[in-house]
Image 1 (tube, rainbow, N blue to C red):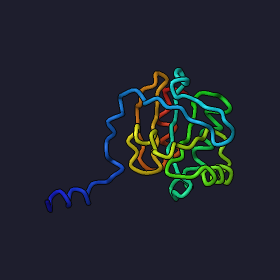
Image 2: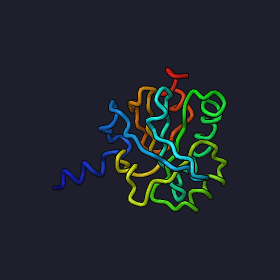
Image 3: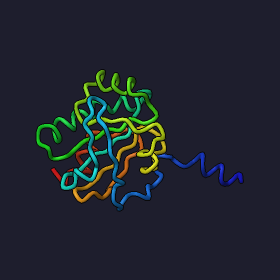
Length: 160
């Protein structure tokens, strides 16, 4: 028992491997924070996707907010090379909308349902977590914790 506790306290949770890497990304339907537009992840096949799970109460999400927005402006909205999608979890619509407005988010943002079904399908441990999905819909990388500009460019370089 002591050995298990010692292992747990010495293991970095950011190094926990995801069983989803190398597998198809679970499909979902997501309604936009603003308006009633919905998307299905499966509709985005043919384009790489950066899928980010976040929350308005998350401090690290505030730090990565500008990084994600700049990446989207450079590789998403201007060139449409990569789609960026953010899913707020364990949050309210009002708080998620206020966060999006405060940080000038322009990429597609939605709110997971009250049961957190999308987060459950992706095995989310906490926020932020991001999944890097190739044009064929396969997850090729998972980042636990905030992203950096270097990480985003390095991982998506083959698609740029």
